[in-house]
Amino acid sequence: MQTLHVAFDDTDSRAGRCTTHLAFKVADQLKKAGEKLVDYPLLIRLNPNIPWKTRGNGAVCLRLQVQDVGRVVDHVRQAVEEGSAIGSGANPGVAFLESDHVPARLQQFSALAMCDVLSRQMAEKVAKAAGVQYFTFGNGHGLVGSIGAMGCLLGGDHTFELIAYRKPENCGTPRVVDEQRVIKFSANTYPNTFNNYDANHGRVLIAPHGPDPVFFGVRGESQDIVRSALPALQPEEELDGWTIFRSNQGTNMHLQNEISIAKAKAYTSGHVKCRVKSRAYAMEGGHVIFTVEQSGAEMPAAVYEPTGLANVAALLEVGDIIEIGVGVRKGTTKHPKILNVEYLVVFELAPAFVVLNPVCKMCGKRMKAEGKNKGYQCDRCKHKDAKAKKILVPQERGIKTGLYIPTPKAHRHLTKPLQRYGIEKSDFQLIKKIL
Image 1: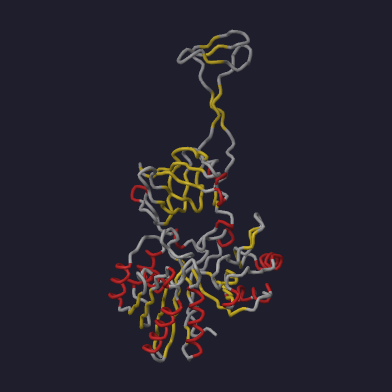
Image 2: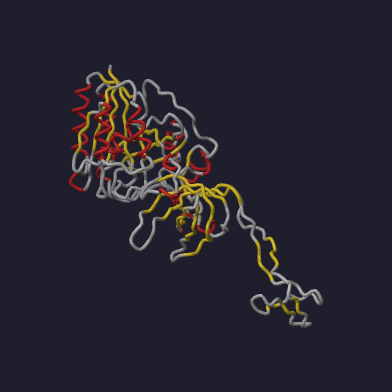
């Protein structure tokens, strides 16, 4: 038996198909042929700020023990070519590495793929240097995701997702999911599953709405907890099948990179520790923008209404020390680059004051200014005081230090839910066979 790493990406389009569904079918076919998975199928979400990304910017990787490498390569290459929506905009890449370990250069490329902008040419260069065999279709940009997924070991924090798939004849029809069962399942499995239901907006989050073959996906901390979704939710629709992926979803993996404001590059992801330079102002639609500074450089930061963080941003004051998880939006001739905020941590609150006119020493009434540098006069008793100054009255801040994250309906695949803070995993021991 030989160790073979298989990864592919960009097999779907907005018209349909699904990369994870193709992975489900390929893994099932390989297992029936006697090949063995040595890890769960990996679902790796890459930098979500890439404008030309696929829907969820997710690539897959299968790590296998195989009897005949050449036969498996031929089978998977054909499956990707035939199972991709190439005529509808898909640009697949599929990669193969025969090795007992994943080279460091692949791991480094994968780390960059979480937060940076990488080209097909860069992926090809890394693949060739690491001894990776690959095939591309269309413009082949899916090779970037393939190499990115192959290099992601998920040796630290990770989650699991059970994805149930629809039969072909049901794709495109409305999905029927029992809302009450989802609510009950979410309550019974908290905090070990996440983003099943948004109670604030009364919205089921496990089922997509497009024509793809995914019926629902349930994310959680272990394979056992996500597997329990099938009997708990009792889907009435006959399924084509299901599989469990190990994933970087819900880990904030794309925000681990520290960004320098002075060197911020369009479409990158990461976090910025900075000082609030100017208070937030509201825009049409409920969005707010404020300015942050770091080591003398400054940049606008935007918080969008659907995240539920706009009210938090509106309470920030000049001088507050914060950290923001961001994606860098490209600048235009009319607008500068903007930091799109994904989470916000308040470390230090600057003192806030209300500025008031001085009180008359004779009668206690609040005085009025006579003019610039002319002192103050009391309207009641006409007492004048040329030396009186404005009074700064300390105010209670309407915000506290701590972490603020978006409401669940605005979470991206990689967004770490509040309940996962403090229960992150630190390692994962590969098992020899997944049944």
